[in-house]
Amino acid sequence: MKTGRIADQGLVLLGCGKMGSAMLAGWMARGLPAGSVWVVDPHPSDWLSSTGVHVNETLPKTPAIVLVAVKPQMMAEALPTLKAMGNGDTLFVSVAAGVTIARFEEILGDQTPIIRAMPNTPAAISKGITAIIGNAIAGSAALGEAEALLTAVGEVVRLENETQIDAVTGVSGSGPAYVFHMIETMAAAGEAQGLDPELALKLATATVAGAGALAQEADDPPAQLRINVTSPNGTTQAALEVLMDHEKGFPALMDRAVAAATQRSRELANG
Image (cartoon, rainbow, N blue to C red; front, side, top):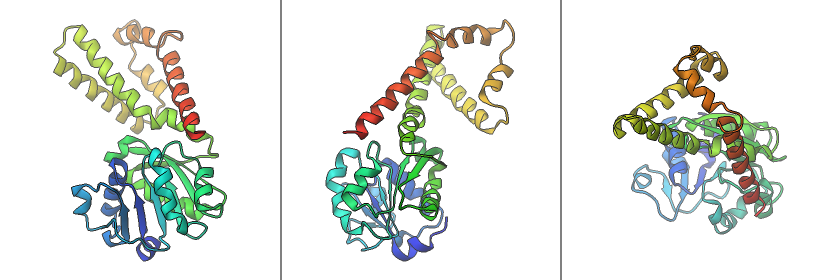
């Protein structure tokens, strides 16, 4: 990653929990100097204290980027402390769920370049995907800076408007939990058919991980991959006839699940 402006002016990380730590580790692995990073966190981890970054020290007055990674309920207390950095050249990038760009503009000023991002938990192993959208003040250069930062923990996609964030939350933000639950239920179903619990869990976990990796690497879309492994009147077809039932199977369940998460994201954003 290019570190010129950040190395000169500094990067402030507001909050350094699991997501913030994953991002910081990714940046440093890509060559960001520890001395260019300031972290504000009330409970810094032992790992953070060992990295060489500035922890809870006096912040630079005009850092290149402030990345906001505190929990949404902590935002009202934490963000006003950075108000002096608003309405300038400092770019604010938020990975806090449910906090709108308009809310940031209220606190920091409407001339502040702001980018809202929605990552997901596989970012912790640099396998995440993050969607980003900026306000009118954040131009293409700012989006490029944010993208360069966030690619340290996975893929980045750009949205057309902020309202799409809620649907992104429903699909990829909350999505890892759906997959974890699928692993749970596959393992439980295997147990019900006579498998040892440990073996059932190992089979389910490896199968989901392998299928996901194949879906990413293959040229064919998931629908074709499904067809490729479904022999007529075979075992997979017997299972898919249950799973693909439009009233009781995956289509209906997933539609309702994603819709529920999307709606909840809207409610959180509206306070």
